Length: 412
Image 1 (cartoon, rainbow, N blue to C red):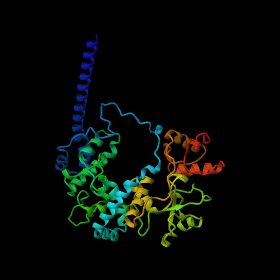
Image 2 (cartoon, one colour; image 1 turned 45 degrees about the vertical axis):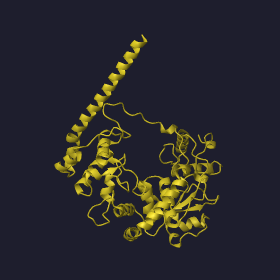
Image 3 (tube, one colour; image 1 turned 135 degrees about the vertical axis):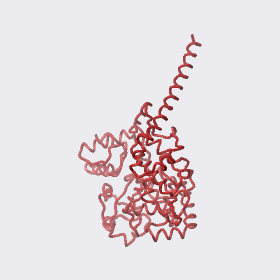
């Protein structure tokens, strides 16, 4: 009987394997039909020639190993219950070993490419240290392995990802890049999400922001350092970078000053923040040319971490990657490259150990009390932080502007 069960199990497993292979084969066939009957008419309407389209997809392959796929006929991927996971402490983002390594290499490469960076600074008004910091963070100064054929990635995701419309637009943009002659398909390599070259531009960003800075007639963000660095600068300028302004300053905020004043929508002249007693933690004075300019409070861990006054340029850095921590990482790395600065002096407290579901409950409780917490997702963005701080103050609690376990029973 045991041998019969074993044989039955083997046969069943073999049948399932064949069924899976047949399903993949069927998806591959559907993909070819989709290319001709669905994508080609759209590409043609967008101005792509038949010859270019055929050349781009002559060797295209579905990449079944990419994340976030939803192949037709396969079980739909289960939604991840992220609200049950712990969110990490903001301090975990700032690996001192990594920052020191990037800063050392960044300073060396800033010296190597000094003449190019000076020309870029004159042209765009973005400090070379900021450009080099982004270059290092995005692609290890162009040294990171970027292994994927972009057309394969985008075609796979446009056909069978969880966000097909996004990648379909990027795929059409990639076809325009190939049509432009800036790069041939074999050299157009990117990440698993389709971000390309040393600046890690998506194809639509390439079309809008990539520049030919070395004068060879091609926008080459894969092999040309001048093109890559100038393209980063052009991106930042087009997103609103303000000349002669810093990204921000680490500060000390007196206890008497509410931490619930952060956010880009609560901007004040830097002189107003200074008049409240906010000072640079370095002991240096704020630059005089910044005093009358618009600035914002930022407390990414509330009272449990470093505190900042940031400029609109901080939010331009967020355009590259929509994360406060990313923009702080770039700002800190740029300061290290430019002046030999070090880690933020404020220490990150023991925060980030709560479940997202607990923070989600706090957000819902605040919303029920009339507060605007931004996205109700279990992550404490600036609107959640300041709403929490306002609620703490009104409830007679010390305002920390960050969720912690002691608040779970109090905020319902």
